[in-house]
Image 1: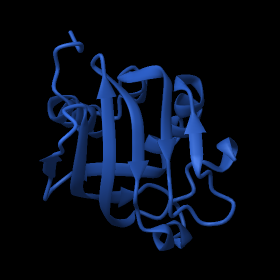
Image 2: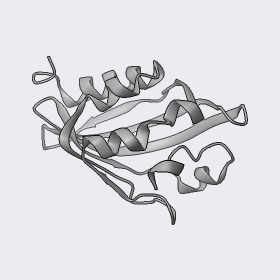
Image 3: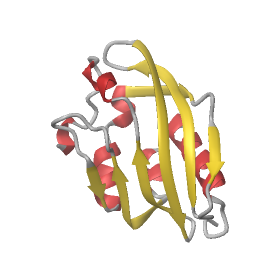
Length: 141
């Protein structure tokens, strides 16, 4: 099913899975050797997560801490590499622990090969993790 899926369509599908809180389904979109990178990660947070199993561990508690409601302002840019897209978007919802609003702007560079994510560089705002209730990776560090 995924081999013929465009990177943009796979990315849109991944957002639907996050909204449905289907983390196993989301992790299933990854290649075994996939890599997530966080170039702006604050001290104590991972800068790189390698392999589908590590990505699953990193994302395991996501829905317990962040309740996403929508990803508005989604803009997907094609690059000269047909396997790579640049994504601009916002994630809005609530922080589960504090019931406070969650509103984060993201820019990601995403590469897909054979219908699976192989690379995801996430340029998110590291100051946002200073808010109570955001530390969903406590066990992954």
